[in-house]
Image (spheres, one colour):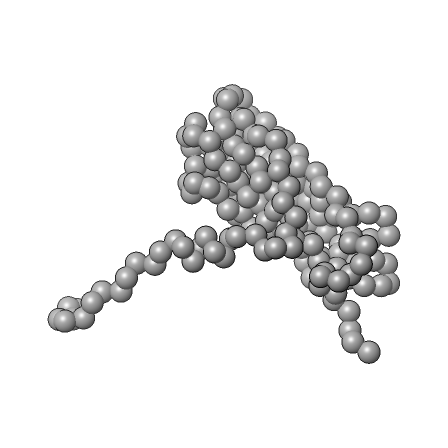
Length: 159
């Protein structure tokens, strides 16, 4: 079908995507050592201090962003952390160009029989091919609850 005198829709720009993926002000940025192998598995393990557990109602989630796009293939690109706060990503670098993989996590955790809290964490993982061998690096991080709950999202009922 052809419509005369009607402008075709404008292609969507990437600027909205970039705005959406920008870390919020309360996000903890964690810089990680470079991954130098072409292919492998990247393990992520988030721990909680004694007396805390991951929320069963609000599942902790992750989203992956690659800059520049398509330089590193990551699987999966989004999903839920396991009930123990871990996940594994398979990666394959498509070029020898340096790139950065950002893994943004929303961690929901609770103190035993008390308040539930939220922590936003972004892991910045530089990728650069220096070796053809495969590897399985591990990122570990321990959530530290704030001393006061101001600024944190509290998931408890009002009285």
